[in-house]
Amino acid sequence: MTAAFLRTRAFRDIVVVLVLVFGVGSIAMLLAHVSPIVGFGALFDGAWGTKGEIAETLVQTTNLLFPALGIAIAFRAGLFNIGAEGQLVMGGFAAGWLGAQFPLPGYLAVPMVLAAGTLAGGVWGAIPGIMRARFKANEVIATLMLNVVAILLTTYLVTGPLQQGGANGSETGPLPKAAQLTHLFDTQLTWAFVLALVLAFVLRWVLQRTIFGYELRAAGDAPEAAKRAGIDLGRTALIAMSLSGAIAGLGGATIVAGALHRFNTGLSPGYGFIAIAVALVGNLDPLWIVVASVAFGMLQSGGIAMQAEAGVPKEVVSLIIGLVIIALAGRRVVASLRST
Image 1 (cartoon, helix red, strand yellow):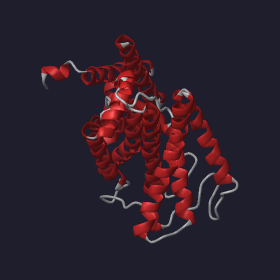
Image 2 (cartoon, one colour; image 1 turned 45 degrees about the vertical axis):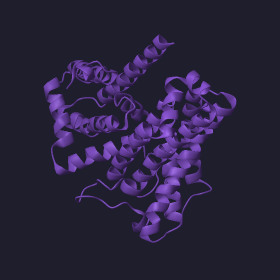
Image 3 (cartoon, helix red, strand yellow; image 1 turned 180 degrees about the vertical axis):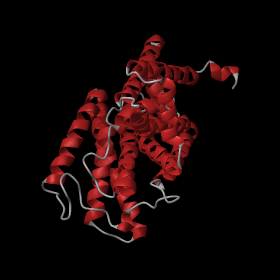
């Protein structure tokens, strides 16, 4: 570890996260009359103890990695996309409904399901992008409200006009086998994990090596200078929000095709919101986001063991994640104010 890295914001953010996770987590456990050693021991054991638990940790990692990568794209452009949850839900709905409605051979079914989710998430992300580009609307409010609309809309559709035969309650019919992602190592882990890793490397290359990546970063870091250099900020905002939503929507499609094999209105326990913390911990760098996703995936899967084996209240993990979001978002706000 070099001295230069020790002075970077990424390192300082890692320190903040570690202090919050172990410091606040320990205090919360002590207040619940649980030994922090026992609690964190259960966390690590529940996340990495067996082959099945490792697979579940990587499944949770995958579910967080897609929306986190999407959020990072928007944040890099200076846009606060708080709507990854709704974009993920819309992507999952499109994938589940189309996959069950139009059975195709395997070599077409999986690409159709994933493409449907990507397109639906992209359209849902484009809505606040258009509002920002054309009307200077606040994308935070727009994306936050669209989360609610997405959940209510998909619930209405799946239980009403688009209800499918064989479906129970608030879910679509089952996906045919041909439309399901293949599982790896006889576990719940699917090829979605590999796809997410490849996407992270591709996005890192795009951000660092392409003109589009340069324009995206310029729009976020120095919008006035970017505007004077001829970069169309409205167009960049629209593309960034659409791409951000598309990646989150792809994540929803992989959940449907890989784990649930149907769309259910409860497919996400808040992945889109937790992914905000993941993206911030990863310093908006796709490769660091992979690392952060693994850490948060461990919290998600190991948190169940903490509750079952050590008696740690499940709210402790939610408390830690919430504090991470507040702390890192606050640091970025303060940093941006100092730079103006």
